[in-house]
Amino acid sequence: MIKKLLVANRGEIAVRIFKTCEKLGIKTVAVFSDADEASVHTRAADEARWVGGSRVKESYLNMDKILEVAKETGADAIHPGYGFLSENPEFSKRVKEAGITFIGPNEEIMETMGNKIAAREAMIKADVPVVPGKNLVSADEKEAAAVCEEIGYPVMIKAASGGGGIGMQRVDHKDELIKVLPSVIKKAETFFGSAELYVEKFIENPRHIEAQVVGDTFGNVQCLGERDCSIQRRNQKIIEEAPAANLSEETRKSLFAYAEKAAKDIGYTNVGTIEFLVDEQENIYFLEMNTRLQVEHPVTEEVTGIDLVEWQIRIAEKKRISELKERNVSYEHAIEVRIYAEDPVTFFPSPGKLKRWSFPDMDQIRYDSGVEEGIQVTPFYDPMLAKVIAKGHSRSDAVEQLAVCLEKAEVEGIKTNIPMLLETLQHDVFKKGNATTQFVQKYVIEKNRTQV
Amino acid sequence: MKEVKTNMAGNVWKVQVAAGDEVTAGQEVVILESMKMEIPITAEEDGTVEEVKVEEGSFVNEDDVLLTLK
Image (cartoon, rainbow over all chains, first blue to last red; front, side):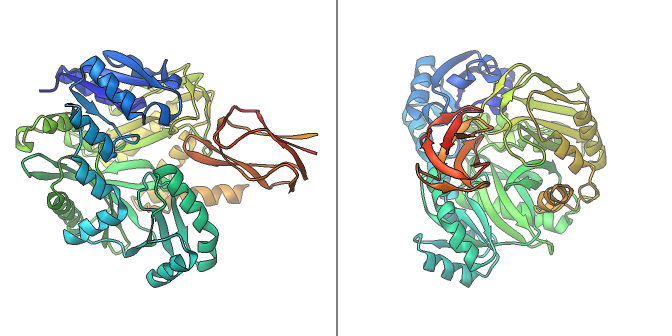
């Protein structure tokens, strides 16, 4: 049994994991950088240790220091949260070599699913449909042009080791390809340490629907439902909900079957997410797999009554899925918005001092946050400040509760995307459940452009 | 002497110009990285770069001078 757990992360996800540990009677250790010395997560654990400078390389990506702290504090498990080292196979390996339990899948799975090319091959082997695509062996313009021509424009160029929407670029024709190729290569190298690229057919107007899977160490796999994450800006999610609106039962069943098949075939353990694109004809295509807890996990928790962090810990303790009982829930639908520190029109970051930060207490609202009034929002990390999750007896009930909550929220000192979120929640296309991944571009960016 | 300042704190990801280069109003001169996003900083006026005051990889605060023009 795990007695003391270190979270190798910061902000809301560290706070979230500590809550489950408290419930389970597990002692906790937080790590923090110079910029986070006074942050909420450092006070949310039983003890906190400094791991380095403000830049992520110096602290939250500093494996040596994190492992040193784990040993010093006697932590017998490490939870990586999301981002940072959460999908880094070397970290998982080193944690295990240090005699500490890593809360996540084994490094071989992480390695396979973390590379877009290897992941596609694994899915093809498992008979799961994938988007037509091909990898670029070199950065040569001629080769890139030939590959794009073969797949057929429009295409999506991606960093093979990428994630979080970074290093992805839609390309409509050859001239554009020549123009953007050097920048995509540089981003891939800078953010992911590898210039390897991948070209995929661009699917027009798809919905981004993902399946939450969980696998134990005895080979049992279960799908815990889907989440619709179509509302995105810069290929990063803003609003997520469960279940997906207007999805036929037949497609839903296929999606779950593919997800379970995929997870079982690769021998997946712990919680994970299989992301799919679903086109206008409800064809399903595997997009990628996240071998970790995801930002949007609360919507699944709210409609299933399952504490996913608890399941992660129990599976790492070699419990079977069948031993993990589900709670009864009375809510049909859950929807989450991510509150970002950014301009609601340009989406440009907005670091600064959070002078006012207040959200109403409401029965149907869950609030996962890593910030508080008076803190400095720094430019060093992701702009996400908090997640607000509404649950409802129907989709419209959940959407309405969320809108009421956001209307009453008071934030001063920095800009946030709250006005844009409210606009989306009140938009007819969204209310009818017809939003695709093009929603923000089509109805928010275009509208702002026209108004300017 | 004219100054090109940043309106945001962040890391200097790329410096697009060098001393002696001619720049025109609206031209991207520096790219910053803030909150995991690239922020292009543009020159507000035409001019010749006199001095680049930052290096790639350095950290800048809001209102810091990135380069001077003459």
